[in-house]
Length: 116
Image 1 (cartoon, rainbow, N blue to C red):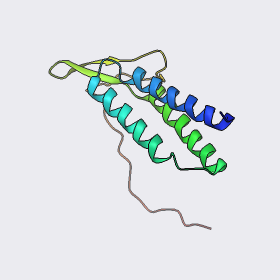
Image 2 (spheres, helix red, strand yellow; image 1 turned 60 degrees about the horizontal axis):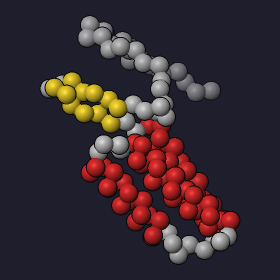
Image 3 (cartoon, helix red, strand yellow; image 1 turned 180 degrees about the horizontal axis):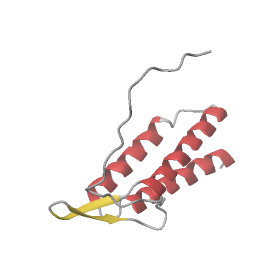
Image 4 (cartoon, rainbow, N blue to C red; image 1 turned 180 degrees about the vertical axis):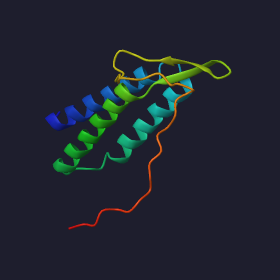
């Protein structure tokens, strides 16, 4: 088995594992993601150019990263209240609580500066 073929299979399995993590306990989303991954890999099966394959592997890795870090699941517990399932790979940013009484700044509309 060639090294590139082995790498393609590795990325395929990694993408399936990432979708299992992202869509855990959601059978419908898990089935849809698995189906989409299989369709995409089968549609690219005919690609023989090594540079194209490497580009597709990079895209696969980017999708895997997106699934691992940026996809979260939310389940409505009561009207307007949601529970988020955040796993260890989820990218966490600094968040500030929303304040109902916050005022949004208003900006003056005026003349623009002339470009030199």
